[in-house]
Image (cartoon, rainbow over all chains, first blue to last red; front, side, top):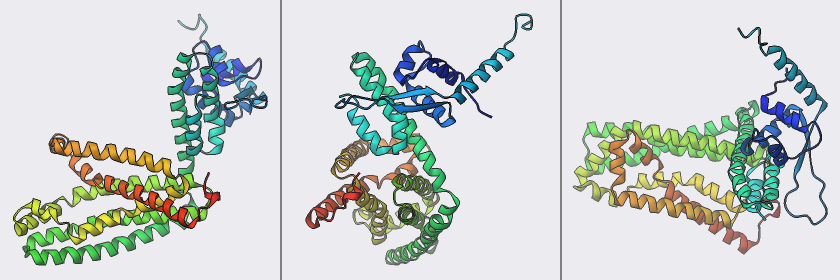
Length: 98
Length: 302
Protein backbone atom coordinates (compact mmCIF):
# COMPACT_ATOMS: atom_id res chain seq x y z
CA UNK A 1 0.00 0.00 0.00
CA UNK A 2 1.73 3.25 -1.05
CA UNK A 3 1.87 6.16 1.38
CA UNK A 4 2.10 9.81 0.44
CA UNK A 5 2.59 12.86 2.64
CA UNK A 6 1.21 16.38 2.19
CA UNK A 7 4.63 17.66 1.08
CA UNK A 8 4.99 14.85 -1.46
CA UNK A 9 1.53 15.63 -2.80
CA UNK A 10 2.46 19.32 -3.13
CA UNK A 11 5.63 18.41 -5.06
CA UNK A 12 3.64 16.24 -7.48
CA UNK A 13 1.19 19.11 -7.94
CA UNK A 14 4.09 21.44 -8.82
CA UNK A 15 5.57 18.92 -11.25
CA UNK A 16 2.30 18.38 -13.13
CA UNK A 17 3.13 20.90 -15.84
CA UNK A 18 6.69 19.82 -16.60
CA UNK A 19 10.19 18.90 -15.36
CA UNK A 20 11.64 21.09 -12.62
CA UNK A 21 14.72 21.20 -10.37
CA UNK A 22 14.80 21.60 -6.57
CA UNK A 23 15.27 25.36 -6.28
CA UNK A 24 12.52 25.97 -8.83
CA UNK A 25 10.11 23.89 -6.74
CA UNK A 26 11.01 25.86 -3.60
CA UNK A 27 10.36 29.16 -5.36
CA UNK A 28 7.05 27.99 -6.84
CA UNK A 29 5.77 26.59 -3.54
CA UNK A 30 5.49 30.05 -2.00
CA UNK A 31 7.44 29.14 1.11
CA UNK A 32 5.75 25.79 1.77
CA UNK A 33 8.81 23.77 0.70
CA UNK A 34 12.05 24.31 2.64
CA UNK A 35 15.62 24.14 1.35
CA UNK A 36 16.78 21.84 4.15
CA UNK A 37 14.24 19.10 3.46
CA UNK A 38 13.28 19.20 -0.22
CA UNK A 39 16.25 17.22 -1.55
CA UNK A 40 15.67 14.46 1.01
CA UNK A 41 11.95 14.40 0.12
CA UNK A 42 12.71 14.28 -3.62
CA UNK A 43 15.15 11.41 -3.11
CA UNK A 44 12.58 9.50 -1.02
CA UNK A 45 9.88 10.07 -3.66
CA UNK A 46 12.22 8.70 -6.30
CA UNK A 47 12.77 5.59 -4.19
CA UNK A 48 9.00 5.19 -3.85
CA UNK A 49 8.62 5.42 -7.64
CA UNK A 50 6.63 8.69 -7.62
CA UNK A 51 9.34 10.58 -9.53
CA UNK A 52 12.15 9.98 -11.97
CA UNK A 53 15.14 12.27 -12.33
CA UNK A 54 17.88 13.01 -14.81
CA UNK A 55 20.79 15.41 -15.02
CA UNK A 56 20.08 18.44 -17.19
CA UNK A 57 21.68 18.63 -20.62
CA UNK A 58 24.39 21.26 -20.56
CA UNK A 59 26.52 22.92 -23.22
CA UNK A 60 30.13 21.81 -23.41
CA UNK A 61 32.45 23.83 -21.16
CA UNK A 62 29.72 24.75 -18.64
CA UNK A 63 31.08 25.06 -15.10
CA UNK A 64 29.57 23.77 -11.86
CA UNK A 65 27.55 20.65 -11.18
CA UNK A 66 24.64 19.84 -13.50
CA UNK A 67 21.20 20.34 -11.98
CA UNK A 68 18.90 17.36 -11.45
CA UNK A 69 15.53 17.64 -13.15
CA UNK A 70 12.57 15.80 -11.66
CA UNK A 71 9.52 14.43 -13.48
CA UNK A 72 6.42 12.86 -11.97
CA UNK A 73 5.65 9.27 -13.04
CA UNK A 74 2.23 7.88 -14.00
CA UNK A 75 2.30 5.91 -10.74
CA UNK A 76 3.04 9.08 -8.76
CA UNK A 77 0.11 10.86 -10.42
CA UNK A 78 -2.18 7.94 -9.65
CA UNK A 79 -1.21 7.87 -5.96
CA UNK A 80 -1.57 11.66 -5.81
CA UNK A 81 -5.08 11.51 -7.28
CA UNK A 82 -6.06 8.77 -4.86
CA UNK A 83 -4.72 10.93 -2.03
CA UNK A 84 -6.80 13.92 -3.19
CA UNK A 85 -9.93 11.74 -3.44
CA UNK A 86 -9.37 10.33 0.04
CA UNK A 87 -8.74 13.78 1.50
CA UNK A 88 -11.94 15.06 -0.09
CA UNK A 89 -13.90 12.05 1.14
CA UNK A 90 -12.62 12.48 4.71
CA UNK A 91 -13.16 16.25 4.85
CA UNK A 92 -16.13 17.16 7.02
CA UNK A 93 -18.98 18.91 5.24
CA UNK A 94 -20.42 21.97 7.02
CA UNK A 95 -23.53 19.96 8.04
CA UNK A 96 -21.39 17.18 9.56
CA UNK A 97 -19.18 19.55 11.49
CA UNK A 98 -21.85 20.12 14.15
CA UNK B 1 32.78 28.77 -7.89
CA UNK B 2 30.57 28.30 -4.80
CA UNK B 3 30.29 24.83 -3.31
CA UNK B 4 33.40 23.35 -4.94
CA UNK B 5 35.06 22.38 -1.64
CA UNK B 6 31.76 21.09 -0.24
CA UNK B 7 31.37 19.00 -3.36
CA UNK B 8 34.88 17.55 -2.92
CA UNK B 9 34.30 16.69 0.73
CA UNK B 10 30.82 15.25 0.10
CA UNK B 11 32.09 13.10 -2.80
CA UNK B 12 34.68 11.54 -0.48
CA UNK B 13 32.32 11.03 2.41
CA UNK B 14 29.23 9.64 0.67
CA UNK B 15 28.47 6.72 -1.61
CA UNK B 16 28.39 7.63 -5.35
CA UNK B 17 24.67 6.92 -5.58
CA UNK B 18 23.87 9.06 -2.51
CA UNK B 19 26.04 11.88 -3.82
CA UNK B 20 24.35 11.86 -7.24
CA UNK B 21 20.78 11.71 -5.98
CA UNK B 22 20.88 13.70 -2.76
CA UNK B 23 23.90 15.97 -2.37
CA UNK B 24 24.75 16.94 -5.94
CA UNK B 25 21.27 18.48 -6.69
CA UNK B 26 21.56 20.68 -3.57
CA UNK B 27 25.07 21.86 -4.55
CA UNK B 28 23.98 22.51 -8.15
CA UNK B 29 21.14 24.70 -6.86
CA UNK B 30 23.55 26.54 -4.53
CA UNK B 31 25.79 27.27 -7.49
CA UNK B 32 22.84 28.59 -9.46
CA UNK B 33 21.64 30.71 -6.54
CA UNK B 34 25.10 32.12 -5.85
CA UNK B 35 25.06 33.67 -9.31
CA UNK B 36 21.88 35.58 -8.38
CA UNK B 37 22.24 36.94 -4.82
CA UNK B 38 24.73 36.70 -1.96
CA UNK B 39 21.90 36.45 0.60
CA UNK B 40 20.37 33.51 -1.23
CA UNK B 41 23.75 31.82 -1.35
CA UNK B 42 24.28 32.09 2.43
CA UNK B 43 20.73 30.90 3.08
CA UNK B 44 21.55 27.77 1.11
CA UNK B 45 24.57 26.71 3.21
CA UNK B 46 22.64 25.54 6.33
CA UNK B 47 20.31 23.60 4.03
CA UNK B 48 23.33 22.01 2.38
CA UNK B 49 24.73 21.02 5.78
CA UNK B 50 21.40 19.36 6.65
CA UNK B 51 21.38 17.47 3.33
CA UNK B 52 24.98 16.29 3.87
CA UNK B 53 24.21 15.12 7.38
CA UNK B 54 21.14 13.25 6.15
CA UNK B 55 23.17 11.68 3.33
CA UNK B 56 25.83 10.47 5.78
CA UNK B 57 23.21 9.03 8.12
CA UNK B 58 21.55 7.26 5.21
CA UNK B 59 24.83 5.72 4.07
CA UNK B 60 25.83 4.59 7.55
CA UNK B 61 22.32 3.19 8.23
CA UNK B 62 22.40 1.30 4.95
CA UNK B 63 25.85 -0.09 5.71
CA UNK B 64 24.99 -0.96 9.31
CA UNK B 65 22.32 -3.33 8.01
CA UNK B 66 25.05 -5.23 6.13
CA UNK B 67 27.45 -5.01 9.07
CA UNK B 68 25.07 -7.22 11.07
CA UNK B 69 23.70 -9.54 8.38
CA UNK B 70 23.89 -13.33 8.79
CA UNK B 71 27.03 -13.62 6.68
CA UNK B 72 28.79 -10.92 8.74
CA UNK B 73 27.93 -12.71 11.98
CA UNK B 74 29.34 -15.93 10.58
CA UNK B 75 32.48 -14.69 8.84
CA UNK B 76 33.41 -11.51 10.73
CA UNK B 77 31.94 -11.11 14.21
CA UNK B 78 32.55 -14.71 15.34
CA UNK B 79 36.19 -14.37 14.34
CA UNK B 80 36.47 -10.93 15.99
CA UNK B 81 34.90 -12.29 19.21
CA UNK B 82 37.31 -15.23 19.26
CA UNK B 83 40.31 -12.92 18.85
CA UNK B 84 38.94 -10.58 21.52
CA UNK B 85 38.61 -13.49 23.95
CA UNK B 86 42.16 -14.65 23.24
CA UNK B 87 43.45 -11.08 23.61
CA UNK B 88 41.52 -10.54 26.87
CA UNK B 89 42.84 -13.80 28.33
CA UNK B 90 46.43 -13.03 27.27
CA UNK B 91 46.12 -9.49 28.61
CA UNK B 92 44.74 -10.76 31.86
CA UNK B 93 47.59 -13.25 32.35
CA UNK B 94 50.33 -10.71 31.49
CA UNK B 95 48.81 -7.85 33.51
CA UNK B 96 48.11 -10.14 36.47
CA UNK B 97 51.74 -11.32 36.60
CA UNK B 98 53.20 -7.83 36.09
CA UNK B 99 50.97 -6.20 38.72
CA UNK B 100 51.48 -9.10 41.15
CA UNK B 101 55.28 -8.66 40.79
CA UNK B 102 55.00 -4.92 41.46
CA UNK B 103 52.83 -5.58 44.53
CA UNK B 104 55.43 -8.07 45.82
CA UNK B 105 58.09 -5.37 45.55
CA UNK B 106 55.81 -2.92 47.38
CA UNK B 107 55.06 -5.45 50.17
CA UNK B 108 51.34 -4.72 49.80
CA UNK B 109 48.94 -6.22 52.36
CA UNK B 110 46.90 -9.28 51.33
CA UNK B 111 43.55 -7.45 51.45
CA UNK B 112 44.76 -4.59 49.24
CA UNK B 113 46.51 -7.07 46.97
CA UNK B 114 43.28 -9.03 46.44
CA UNK B 115 41.29 -5.85 45.69
CA UNK B 116 43.89 -4.68 43.17
CA UNK B 117 44.18 -8.05 41.40
CA UNK B 118 40.37 -8.37 41.20
CA UNK B 119 40.34 -5.27 39.01
CA UNK B 120 42.81 -6.73 36.49
CA UNK B 121 39.99 -8.44 34.57
CA UNK B 122 38.35 -5.06 33.86
CA UNK B 123 41.66 -3.59 32.73
CA UNK B 124 41.99 -6.41 30.20
CA UNK B 125 38.69 -5.67 28.42
CA UNK B 126 39.57 -2.39 26.65
CA UNK B 127 42.66 -3.58 24.74
CA UNK B 128 40.79 -6.80 23.81
CA UNK B 129 38.05 -4.77 22.15
CA UNK B 130 40.63 -2.83 20.16
CA UNK B 131 41.93 -6.14 18.85
CA UNK B 132 38.36 -7.07 17.89
CA UNK B 133 38.11 -3.75 16.02
CA UNK B 134 41.18 -4.51 13.92
CA UNK B 135 40.12 -8.10 13.16
CA UNK B 136 36.59 -7.01 12.20
CA UNK B 137 37.86 -4.22 9.94
CA UNK B 138 40.28 -6.52 8.13
CA UNK B 139 37.67 -9.26 7.78
CA UNK B 140 35.18 -6.81 6.27
CA UNK B 141 37.83 -5.48 3.92
CA UNK B 142 38.76 -8.98 2.78
CA UNK B 143 35.13 -10.01 2.36
CA UNK B 144 34.00 -6.94 0.44
CA UNK B 145 37.01 -5.04 -0.87
CA UNK B 146 35.14 -2.09 -2.41
CA UNK B 147 33.08 -1.14 0.65
CA UNK B 148 35.23 1.18 2.78
CA UNK B 149 32.08 2.72 4.28
CA UNK B 150 31.15 -0.70 5.64
CA UNK B 151 34.50 -0.95 7.39
CA UNK B 152 33.98 2.56 8.78
CA UNK B 153 30.47 1.60 9.99
CA UNK B 154 31.87 -1.50 11.72
CA UNK B 155 34.66 0.57 13.26
CA UNK B 156 32.13 3.11 14.56
CA UNK B 157 30.14 0.31 16.21
CA UNK B 158 33.22 -1.10 17.91
CA UNK B 159 34.62 2.32 18.82
CA UNK B 160 31.35 3.20 20.57
CA UNK B 161 31.41 -0.20 22.29
CA UNK B 162 35.04 0.34 23.36
CA UNK B 163 34.34 3.79 24.82
CA UNK B 164 31.28 2.38 26.64
CA UNK B 165 33.28 -0.59 27.94
CA UNK B 166 36.15 1.67 29.06
CA UNK B 167 33.66 3.91 30.84
CA UNK B 168 32.06 0.96 32.61
CA UNK B 169 35.34 -0.77 33.44
CA UNK B 170 36.70 2.50 34.89
CA UNK B 171 33.74 2.63 37.26
CA UNK B 172 34.01 -1.09 38.09
CA UNK B 173 37.76 -0.98 38.73
CA UNK B 174 37.52 2.12 40.94
CA UNK B 175 38.18 0.17 44.21
CA UNK B 176 41.14 -1.56 42.57
CA UNK B 177 42.53 1.75 41.25
CA UNK B 178 42.09 3.37 44.63
CA UNK B 179 43.84 0.46 46.38
CA UNK B 180 46.70 0.62 43.85
CA UNK B 181 47.13 4.36 44.47
CA UNK B 182 47.20 3.70 48.20
CA UNK B 183 49.77 0.92 47.82
CA UNK B 184 51.95 3.13 45.60
CA UNK B 185 51.66 5.99 48.09
CA UNK B 186 52.65 3.66 50.93
CA UNK B 187 55.74 2.50 49.02
CA UNK B 188 56.90 5.73 47.38
CA UNK B 189 55.84 8.11 50.12
CA UNK B 190 53.60 10.17 47.83
CA UNK B 191 51.28 9.43 44.90
CA UNK B 192 52.99 12.12 42.81
CA UNK B 193 56.30 10.27 43.07
CA UNK B 194 54.65 7.05 41.95
CA UNK B 195 53.16 8.68 38.89
CA UNK B 196 56.49 10.11 37.74
CA UNK B 197 57.80 6.72 36.70
CA UNK B 198 55.25 4.74 34.67
CA UNK B 199 55.06 1.08 35.68
CA UNK B 200 55.66 -1.67 33.07
CA UNK B 201 52.00 -2.71 32.94
CA UNK B 202 50.94 0.93 32.42
CA UNK B 203 53.32 1.22 29.48
CA UNK B 204 51.95 -2.04 28.06
CA UNK B 205 48.35 -0.83 28.36
CA UNK B 206 49.18 2.50 26.69
CA UNK B 207 51.02 0.75 23.88
CA UNK B 208 48.11 -1.65 23.26
CA UNK B 209 45.58 1.17 23.21
CA UNK B 210 47.53 2.77 20.36
CA UNK B 211 47.19 -0.26 18.05
CA UNK B 212 43.81 0.73 16.53
CA UNK B 213 45.08 4.25 15.93
CA UNK B 214 48.18 2.83 14.29
CA UNK B 215 45.98 0.75 12.03
CA UNK B 216 43.75 3.73 11.28
CA UNK B 217 46.82 5.86 10.56
CA UNK B 218 48.20 3.41 8.01
CA UNK B 219 44.85 2.97 6.24
CA UNK B 220 44.15 6.70 6.13
CA UNK B 221 47.65 7.56 4.97
CA UNK B 222 47.29 5.16 2.05
CA UNK B 223 43.90 6.55 1.10
CA UNK B 224 43.77 10.19 2.15
CA UNK B 225 47.34 11.46 2.71
CA UNK B 226 48.54 14.80 3.97
CA UNK B 227 45.35 16.93 4.11
CA UNK B 228 43.98 14.49 6.68
CA UNK B 229 47.24 14.57 8.65
CA UNK B 230 46.99 18.37 8.81
CA UNK B 231 43.36 18.27 9.95
CA UNK B 232 44.23 15.67 12.61
CA UNK B 233 47.12 17.87 13.79
CA UNK B 234 44.77 20.86 14.07
CA UNK B 235 42.22 18.89 16.09
CA UNK B 236 44.98 17.43 18.25
CA UNK B 237 46.55 20.84 18.92
CA UNK B 238 43.19 22.27 20.01
CA UNK B 239 42.46 19.25 22.20
CA UNK B 240 45.87 19.32 23.90
CA UNK B 241 45.62 23.08 24.43
CA UNK B 242 42.14 22.78 25.96
CA UNK B 243 43.26 19.85 28.08
CA UNK B 244 46.32 21.68 29.39
CA UNK B 245 44.27 24.81 30.12
CA UNK B 246 41.66 22.73 31.97
CA UNK B 247 44.39 21.00 34.01
CA UNK B 248 46.16 24.27 34.80
CA UNK B 249 42.96 25.91 35.97
CA UNK B 250 41.93 22.79 37.97
CA UNK B 251 38.75 22.55 35.93
CA UNK B 252 38.78 18.74 35.93
CA UNK B 253 38.58 18.63 39.72
CA UNK B 254 35.71 21.08 39.64
CA UNK B 255 33.95 19.10 36.89
CA UNK B 256 34.42 15.80 38.75
CA UNK B 257 32.91 17.23 41.92
CA UNK B 258 30.03 18.94 40.05
CA UNK B 259 28.92 16.26 37.58
CA UNK B 260 28.55 12.64 38.76
CA UNK B 261 30.36 10.12 36.56
CA UNK B 262 32.37 12.70 34.60
CA UNK B 263 35.65 11.59 36.19
CA UNK B 264 35.21 8.09 34.75
CA UNK B 265 34.46 9.57 31.34
CA UNK B 266 37.54 11.79 31.45
CA UNK B 267 39.66 8.88 32.63
CA UNK B 268 38.31 6.71 29.80
CA UNK B 269 39.24 9.21 27.08
CA UNK B 270 42.47 10.68 28.42
CA UNK B 271 44.49 8.57 26.03
CA UNK B 272 43.04 10.31 22.96
CA UNK B 273 45.75 13.00 22.48
CA UNK B 274 48.75 10.62 22.57
CA UNK B 275 46.88 8.28 20.26
CA UNK B 276 46.31 11.12 17.82
CA UNK B 277 50.03 11.90 17.96
CA UNK B 278 50.64 8.28 16.99
CA UNK B 279 48.12 8.57 14.18
CA UNK B 280 49.71 11.70 12.71
CA UNK B 281 53.20 10.24 13.15
CA UNK B 282 52.22 7.05 11.37
CA UNK B 283 50.65 8.95 8.49
CA UNK B 284 53.88 10.91 8.08
CA UNK B 285 56.04 7.78 8.37
CA UNK B 286 53.95 5.83 5.90
CA UNK B 287 54.07 8.63 3.34
CA UNK B 288 57.85 8.79 3.70
CA UNK B 289 58.21 5.03 3.26
CA UNK B 290 55.96 5.06 0.20
CA UNK B 291 57.99 7.86 -1.34
CA UNK B 292 61.26 6.00 -0.78
CA UNK B 293 60.08 2.69 -2.18
CA UNK B 294 57.56 4.19 -4.62
CA UNK B 295 55.10 1.44 -3.84
CA UNK B 296 51.92 3.52 -3.69
CA UNK B 297 49.07 1.76 -5.42
CA UNK B 298 47.18 4.17 -7.71
CA UNK B 299 44.11 1.92 -7.51
CA UNK B 300 43.81 2.74 -3.81
CA UNK B 301 43.73 6.52 -4.34
CA UNK B 302 40.27 7.79 -5.15
